[in-house]
Amino acid sequence: MVQAALPIDLPPLVRDLDLVESALRSSVVADDPFLEQVAQHLIKAGGKRLRPVLTLASAYAGGATASDDVVQGAVAVELVHLGSLYHDDVMDESMTRRGQPTANARHGNFVAIVAGDYCLARSAQIAARLGTAVAGLLGATIGRLCEGQVGELHHLYSPDRPEVAYFTSISGKTASLMAAACRVGALTTGLSDSATDALTRYGDRVGMVFQVVDDILDVVATDEQLGKPAGNDLLEGVYTLPVLRGLLDPAIGEELRAALAARVDRSGLDRVRKLVRASSGIESAVAVARGLADEAAAALAPLPPTGARREMAGLGHVLIDRLPL
Image 1 (cartoon, rainbow, N blue to C red):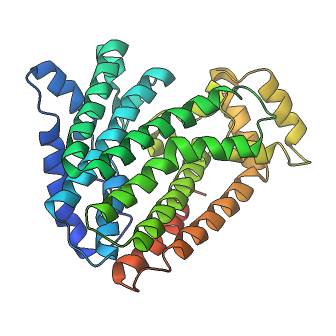
Image 2 (cartoon, rainbow, N blue to C red):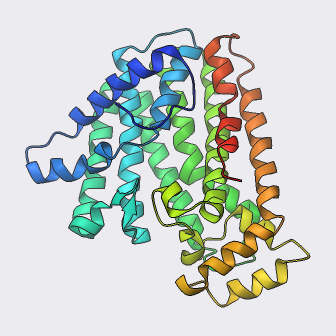
């Protein structure tokens, strides 16, 4: 059973997500018990399962039910996400995720990387069974995840990071997989090209909302609310939209720029986070997220006016309204 509250209220979701959860656990059963234990570490930690939700909801929006192919497609997408999380935690040297010690904290970087690779390999096996369209899509999406992640490296510790570079990065590292989740739901249901493209566009916009909200949370939320250390982006020199917009605030921007120029460490993190919160950067980033949420809802126009479409249309704003502001 998925533990997090579902962001979309559709009757079949609880039942179908249980099917996804069961299939997800079965997908990383390995001959080596230790590898299986580590590969299931993040699965057992729970989570939002937002990507499987998008896959299932996309099938519903097209008038279909969750067939075994749709469930397996949702599993393949979530395995890509989980694999990327293992790798992210190694790169970020994260000690906690979802309120629990990370795999790298427990077992070391090598084991965590192998566990992430195993999740990606199992995703590829499932995708291959679902056909070349799904397999090709997920392969291309993994490439985009890498491109988006590497794109951040070009502007580390740079308060002059262009916003276009920020949006390009989050489009790759986050939105591409959300878009793929929706497209997999359409492909495994046999929806029309127009419906498939509409759902893909929707997933991209929702993914952008999700990442902007996540970046705001890194500044405004507590460790407990996040389930991981807050302010990690600032410590790593990744200046996200609320920070970039905060730098434009005439009242606070110069003080914030000076604080960032010294490179933020643990001792100065609270001060920098307070500066960003006191600036217009948070409000401005929220406004951007709301615009993206409106674009997501508009992308669904070609689909029939079903309950699934209505719930999906409101998802972006649901994510924003959960911000502890």
